[in-house]
Image 1 (tube, rainbow, N blue to C red):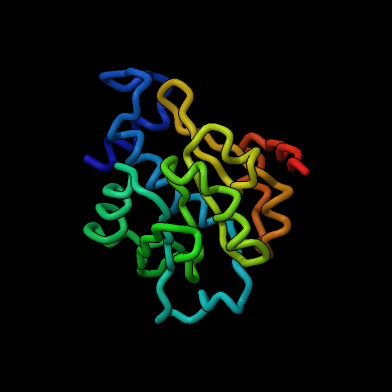
Image 2 (cartoon, rainbow, N blue to C red; image 1 turned 45 degrees about the vertical axis):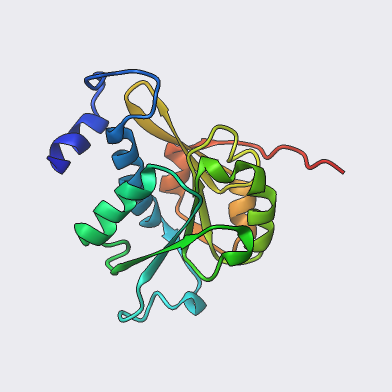
Length: 184
């Protein structure tokens, strides 16, 4: 069934039940995209990914139905990121964020976004969201849908500040966005 859903993601035809509300297959696709995006990112050596016994840590901040799909894919199905076991850590506030390789920021944390980004500033943490405007506000990669396709925006300026190295392959398929000017 997972293969069938993934095939539908990359087709030109709308999926059944097409509406503008978030659909379960959309959440599934976005959860899988996190793994695909990670293949195009290189973390610094001090992040411990070279050590095979260390897990890949996926942090999630905020409540969303997509969290269930992360659990299903990376815990129940034991899918790997960068050929490593995935440990999922849930955070409830910016102050609770600890070390992780990717931080997925849900829509429920939109008001806290500046504090979240400030907390991980200058750390090699890839931030990913799925909320309109997140990339322009400083999130590295923002997933969105257009018709039946999952696409992504990239904030290249913020990625370059993060100590992460991103392959041009990821950049050429994403929409590069300019950050919003900060209010003084």
